[in-house]
Image (tube, rainbow, N blue to C red; front, side, top):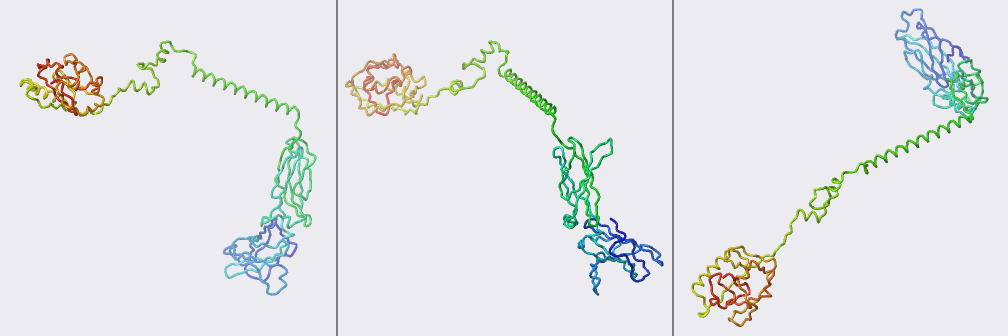
Length: 446
């Protein structure tokens, strides 16, 4: 708001100078925001207006002017602008201040121009800072927020009797609105006499009657009222909701049926395999190449061979007893026997030899040979014979030592006289009683 003629005092100039003083001192105010403006004056001898001209603004409470030596407070010093903001000075709202302004250019100075300012009376009142609308059935609730000061405070603290004027009308594009005015000192008001389901617009103004202050109206806010819902709308909403739920249920059931059919056709197809394919897949014999899981037993039978581990056989030694003159074999037989022993000794060290002259490989036993113990030399005929045994009839290659235990057939019971040595070219009379030690068995091939 522009205030050209303040009621508190008049504008006046002091002293004479060649530089013209400022003119048209005006205060632009809103709530507690104050801004002083002016215009540069004309001087009779000035050649250039506004060239290197600055201004100074000072203020002091008016009651202090009665005291000599009053100190003025500088608000703006040597400013090139033609306005000065007094809001940061936080002037007391209920006090009266005297303002003064002068111009300066170099060494020249103009006279002071005085202006009194009454903030409580001259400051313009601002509109509400905010207006909210809310439907309350067929009515509208209006919430009003107070105007704010420069310190973000409520203007009701400075104007306790301030109230609001609420103007509302029915929104219509075909006819001119009929406005309704409601004055209220409170911040929340309910607008009466409204129709349901109708659009209304609201605008609010701040008012203070002591100095006849009124603010500008706020921007119109529009909202539709509510009311009782007709029965046909309730029925329509219920019908649409039921129809939508039924359609959704059908879609859900159809989707589940499709999934069931797909799973059934995948896991249990209607087309069966030919019988020979089924017989091939059901063949679980070890020789079948049908895909199947292998058990440990079947795997071992298919890929593994049985292995028998035999302990190491201790070689047996054959020692001949000293021959007497009556029992010594002929010279030809002794040489032949030594020759045969060398042949059989070179064939292996298992201790058991074949009777076929050492031509075949020796047969090993898979069991440990029992200890024969210490045997005394044969005396020729003291041992009883079990039965006659001929090397021509029973070969050691055919009779394994696993079947005939040395514990059951003692070498003491087998007489070399009854073992035929004719395949080797020997006679029974030449084979005298030989002694056998406990470390070995006599070579039956000799």
